[in-house]
Image 1 (cartoon, rainbow, N blue to C red):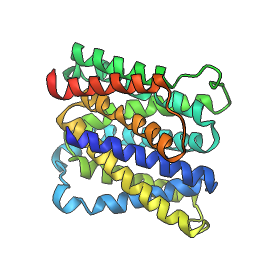
Image 2 (cartoon, one colour):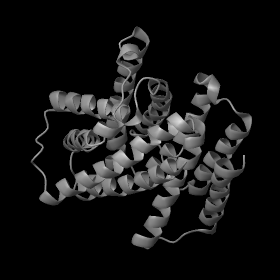
Image 3 (cartoon, rainbow, N blue to C red):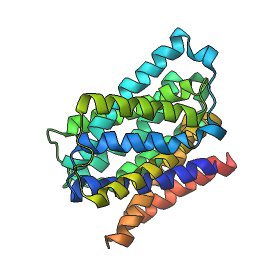
Length: 279
């Protein structure tokens, strides 16, 4: 359980750093993403001696080969769209769409993972997800642009990838699966995009390494949550991540917290506490 809480903190840190690099420094997505995934793989590699386990016999079966290829294709697609959205879309539109990801992840879990079907958890997850979206909804901010469809697709594919990851954790440990995922993606991005990795301010390299560190914390611990708690329960706990982003924004950027944000936070925290300790 503690892994999922820490993963939520990693999510919040990564979102803030990514926004700084992509928006303030205007680093092209095709330069930022390959370098980020390269560092994600490098940092995760340090975990492999202790936590890297693979069932090679099962991995080289048709089922798991196809699942791994599907994960790579889905992950490359949604990451490309996700970072394009961070850079080019209004933050309000981007947030509104991406906040739907927990709800769709829970729905996909109910459809594709029979062992995850649990009505109380499904209701709790639905409440937390809907309250999160409702707390951030501002009808005067929501605008449909050319990039909105891309962000919606990224959100749906991100949610679907969680289901594929849960299935692959039957043959990979979380650290080994994330290393394999990021390594293959880094190689593909480097080959097809051929980015000029050194053509950016020196400070951006430090930010990207920091973002990668947050990413490894978030994703590896998220995978551990999927393996130990299940996709639905982990997703409910990870709803805390966006709340941390909002509170950080209020503290760092001096944004005012609305009453609805505080009420929504209380409801979501109560839901997480119930799921974690009392159900």
